[in-house]
Length: 132
Image 1 (cartoon, rainbow, N blue to C red):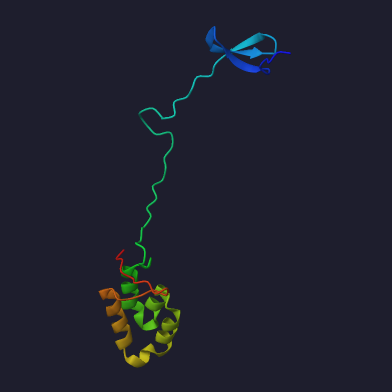
Image 2 (cartoon, helix red, strand yellow):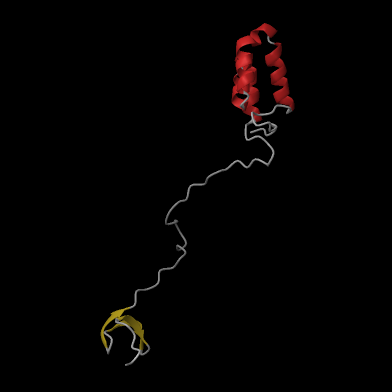
């Protein structure tokens, strides 16, 4: 018993540009070898366009919330506690909404200043320091 190759298409050493069908005993049919396509597109227009995605990288230990958004919300809607809701301080947002008017605008002003100087914290206790 011989260890012959199984039937299939093989390149023959005498004709490197062709593949031959090996039926288990002999080579029979022949076909040209498919040309190898280049992996890199040719110079010119790209074959496809990949959209560029911008990801905001936040350092570890810093809130992903924007200080700019918080300060704008605090200035315009601070009397309703919207800045606290945005930062994730839901309890203080509800308290500010319900009884903030009793402070005659002092509480929203103080919160807005706290946000501007960078001393505000989000609901997870992380400092809100990134302007974006």
